[in-house]
Amino acid sequence: MTKLSIIVVFYNMKREAERTLHSLSASYQTGIEAGEYEVIAIDNGSPNPLSKHDVERHGSNFRYVFYETDSVSPVAAVNAGVDMALAPNIALIVDGARMASPGLIRQTLVGLETAKQPFVCSLSWHLGPKEQNSSMLEGYNQVSEDRLLDIIKWPTNGYKLFDVSSLAPSSMPGFHSGIPRECSWLSMRKKTFEGIGGFDQRFQTPGGGLVNHDFRNRAMKITDVMPIAILGEGVFHQYHGGISTNATSSIRASTLKTFNQEYERIHGLEYSCEDTPSVTYVGNIPEQALRFEHTQGN
Image (tube, rainbow, N blue to C red; front, top):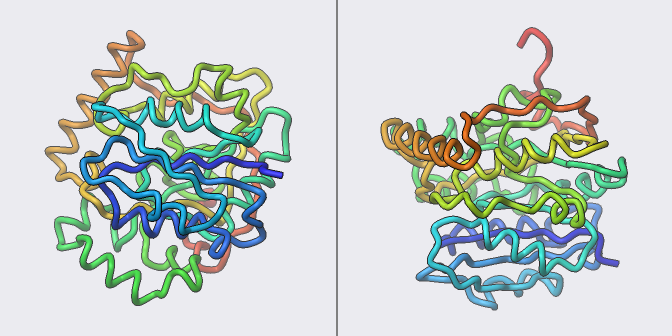
């Protein structure tokens, strides 16, 4: 029985898609069988798109969709992917450059079984020695990232990704610190996603702007929602020239200003992070990730 449909969106990232898709495959994920989940890989109108073979060679539970659009936002593609989902639960990776740790899918299913109305989220990391906006200024790029991943032989032990990564700013200060303001991996009931209107398609800036932040805020207002944070697992952002994660400080500041202006046009007020109800934690923190555990006083 298909328990979970994972929707992952790509745009002009063949290099990154190969690793992301492998990290979602049953040959890499632990404690899970291919028949328990599906992966819907959506190419969001790329000029140089993925092919059906690029996607479906990763397993019989992978589906390829080319979403024809002129939009620079992935929001409509995300909603279309959820509409196609066969499972009662969905998980989203809006930026397809994010690789998963080996137990992420298994622990997501554990979280989904914990409550009637779950909202499951993991933390996010940047590959490389620092946040990528900083490390790129010191020479970090796709070539050095390829070398880094080759050195750790990540497909044989994905938890080594923690050894070569830095916590994403939106996920600070680390494990046991609640639900991050931006959920780069989130999961919930399909009917709940649809019931609150899915991703807001008014977010049309590149990458969807603050659509992830907005959806997280809306989800926190659901009656009886149980926020669930996964310990010891997460997603790892590959360097790909992203509009926000791989921009210089001045360009990033301008981009964030545009994102915030779009949010204000849509909602008539400035963005702020919604408080969460009491958070439940699932999972265990492996040795490689212990340095990212937040304890009081850190």
